[in-house]
Amino acid sequence: LRTWLAVAAGVGLAVAPFVAANRALYGRPLGMHALQVLERAEPLATRLVAAAHRAVVLMGMLLVYAPIVVAVPALAAFGHRGRPDGAVPIARRVALVTVLFVGAAALVVPNLGGLQWGPRYLMPVVPLAAWATGLGWDETLRRGSRRLRIAAASVAAVLLACGFGVNAVAGVGNLRRNYARRVLPAVELVSSSGVVPVVVNDQHVAQEMAALMHDRRFFLLPDDDRPGERLAELADAFHRAGRDRFLMIVALYGGDAAGFPPEVELHGALARSTGRLLGRYGDFYRIYRFETSPAAGGSPFRR
Image (cartoon, rainbow, N blue to C red):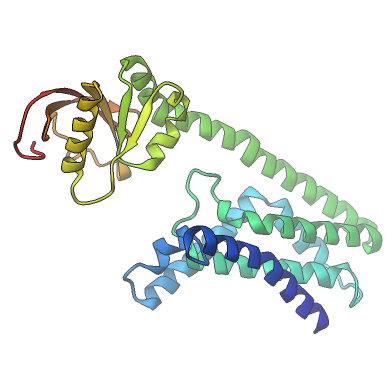
């Protein structure tokens, strides 16, 4: 019981700073990502089913991306009995904390991590899983039979090779292909356009255009129900600053190509802007080029 209380106290001490930091920075103890889940108007049963599905997938992802820190404790620590105060019982408790964390994370994260290294929400438990691995490995070397040591070394070598292949080889290749097909065409167009102001409809677009930030200015369109009016206000501001050309990069979520007319007109208080669709660049972006001229009045947005 004392060991379990110590484990619980250690987990509490590890979690408390994160809760305090989230509360101070975001006003929510679980952080901003949790708001995307906890504030959804969904029945509790629906949320729990979705969380259970995420937990299963996340555990599978941990096995794929970091197999050595999951499978070796299963082989070494659970494969034979240890002393009550030895390394095996500790490894079991640490492994249990890892599993419980995966379930808890699945309740508050909105997705599986996406392109930002899939199981990124599980990073806090990777050191714990690595500790359990070390404990189990040490116990196997000290107390395991020669056959078990050979088996453990063979499995560990295979798992290390698999982890290296997934992260360092396949992961780097996927990142390169994703950037080349999805991002680079848009970066090259913006870079060669000579237009300085760039309007984006999502913060992630600007993040992926980071290579251009030394000589471009990015403006995020507010996420509300008045995009045309907001864009007309930006066009007026650009006109006042002497900028009569700007680009708009629209992110394509889900690959939906509908809703992109070849020409868009903006009528602001000071300027009239005409945007022409340059086309689709990469697997993710539609890009418009706007030309602004002095004008007055009119509808804030029309197609």
